[in-house]
Image (cartoon, rainbow, N blue to C red; front, side):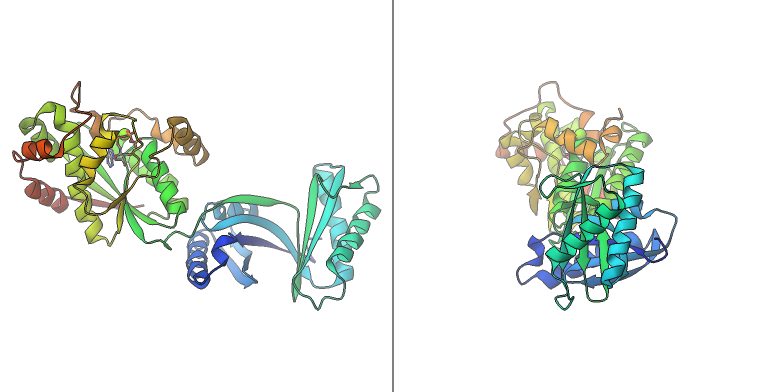
Length: 394
Ligand code: ATP
Ligand code: MG
């Protein structure tokens, strides 16, 4: 069977993005993103027909299934199937599907099935319902115990008839949809080692934003392990976000200065504003059009509507907070799904959790905070941090 059939991955882009005037633009970015994933893991042949992409793997140390799973992480794709490609020959099709059904049955016995045919090439002489019937007959003659069930079959054999080839498959790996990363511009993700910010990055990448990340590190108060954890998190979200740069801000000097010179119940809010000032500069230098954070309303003192308003005043960009209305449990579910959770809960300090007041202000007033900030030379602190930036390629 393997001799007459070539395995090919069939990629289905999301339907929505294929409509409208921007179709070509989205498609080009999606194809580039797919190719950037594939280039590190295999050599391959890429083709497309009617808005679907077909990939024949030539050489790789990964299996087709593993490669399909990796492609499922690329936003803009709704599903990936491992198909068998044969010549567009009707008799060959029925012979092949009989062999395939036998192989599937021997591996995991099933009792009901259906055949679904899509005849994209209308010059193919037999209509799709008739092809399905004949293919079903061929399967039944090989395994007579089976039953056809049109509505709730255990297995669906899909047949796609194209000009030169016919593709047959019975499994589809579900992907995450979304729109291709890069099609909505670029933003700077404030990535801490916590549960929330990697998920915020995931969610904005799903809406097409390409990300760079910034992490504020306060050695020796935050350890090397805390930094490594953030680098690990960036690596885990890379297949989804295509993130390739992590800016590390050495933040000890501003933090100590804030601690020395500002009222302690305002430490958190002033620190977050200084972080924003630094993020602004990094965003400008790297052509980002927005800043992404993992804040969600009401989680902690710094995430009240008053605190977020005062933090935003320091931002020169739109601050995107995709988790704003989510419960912690919902965020954790996503963190488990994309595999960041176990890393996020490793117990290393974040700079936001050192130097915190017992009773931080939950309803800061902008004018009062600005008054307190007069004790600092924020421009100088920002310059210092930008000059001492460390950049890590992910
Ligand atoms: P997370 O789980 O993402 O750490 P959190 O619930 O701990 O969030 P905060 O500590 O108030 O909440 O941080 C809110 C957001 O500020 C984070 O989601 C992240 O976007 C940003 N942030 C906090 N600490 C840092 C840091 N050390 N470096 C970069 N960004 C940070
Ligand atoms: Mg945190």
